[in-house]
Length: 198
Ligand SMILES: Nc1nc2c(ncn2[C@@H]2O[C@H](COP(=O)(O)OP(=O)(O)OP(=O)(O)O)[C@@H](O)[C@H]2O)c(=O)[nH]1
Ligand SMILES: Nc1ccn([C@@H]2O[C@H](COP(=O)(O)OP(=O)(O)O)[C@@H](O)[C@H]2O)c(=O)n1
Ligand SMILES: [Mg+2]
Image 1 (cartoon, protein in one colour):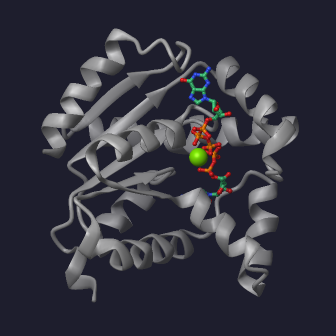
Image 2 (spheres, protein in one colour; image 1 turned 30 degrees about the vertical axis):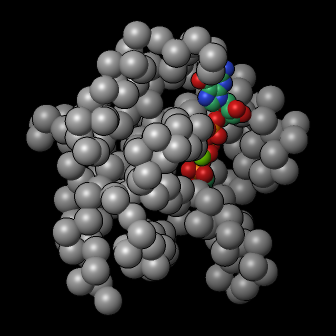
Image 3 (cartoon, rainbow, N blue to C red; image 1 turned 120 degrees about the vertical axis):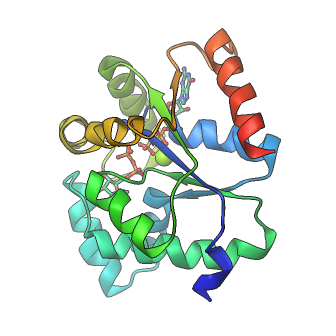
């Protein structure tokens, strides 16, 4: 089974909470036919299933902490295997959250060919998440948990970017502009992504 994804093309999508990872991934999917797997969405699906495991996960996510590495990795791997036959490649959104998660992914699945780093100012992220919280129903879109998620992002996830920068596979996308006003930078990144994905 795992053989099916041995040579899969993998792109990690990393950025702070509310930076726009999900939004950008949808655009890439629409344009290039990649499969988008959001680790947060996979976890929320487990919570929604009402399983015992889901209850444990919910408690951790509500506090803005990281769930155990093996749990997320197994979910991503299963989702990749399920889509292997119809995917040109995978956008893994919200993973790795810490360098160790990246190392384990590479041991169990494979190495990424690109890391898209969605950069946004903390005040932009907070503003978007507070607004999203009005309608998202997400237990972690409240001011207290947003702050914890941001702190953890700077402490644990930013080092991931430095780690992969050393390999020359990081591409930074800056997203302070409105969704409609596609900036020069995004267009440049888009072209790179197109090259990488063709
Ligand atoms: N103005 C503006 N809003 C955006 C942009 N990208 C995303 N948003 C909004 O910001 C919020 C967060 O976007 P998501 O794509 O859900 O961000 P994310 O990084 O996946 O967030 P998490 O799921 O919390 O990790 C949503 O309400 C989006 O509608 C953008 O480029 N400009
Ligand atoms: N690789 C991951 C991804 C998400 N999570 C958990 O899921 C929550 C939501 O993740 P997400 O990617 O949907 O949202 P953001 O925290 O990026 O806004 C995180 O705050 C973590 O509690 C995790 O523990 N490990
Ligand atoms: Mg998301």
